[in-house]
Image (cartoon, rainbow, N blue to C red; front, side, top):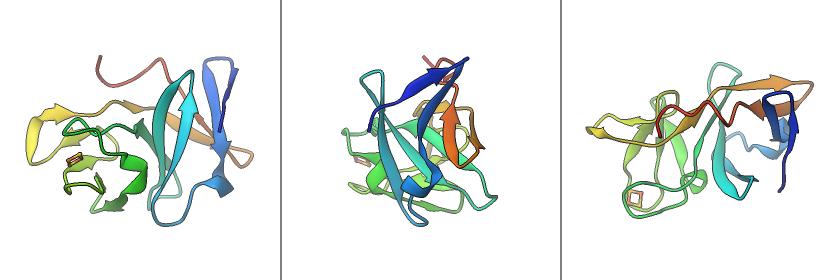
Length: 113
Ligand code: FES
């Protein structure tokens, strides 16, 4: 799945591409991100690669507000990217919104470098 840019919001995918349970894998400028629906009718966008051992977070699920990695179960806060079990471990998250059934994100505004 490829993406396009509109202003500083990047069009990532259709909301319908994001499953109700689990995530969608999207490539933006050769960078893989995971897109999840959250319980508040919003979406969460974060880097797809798990910092533990590179598991694909889009293959995980959201539990208690955290994306749970499918490989070894590390959780990452879906909004901040912080691992509650080890606050020194984070994944980048990106501001996101839904516009006319499309998922958009500010990919230059990641939470960490
Ligand atoms: S690769 Fe994600 S928890 Fe191990």
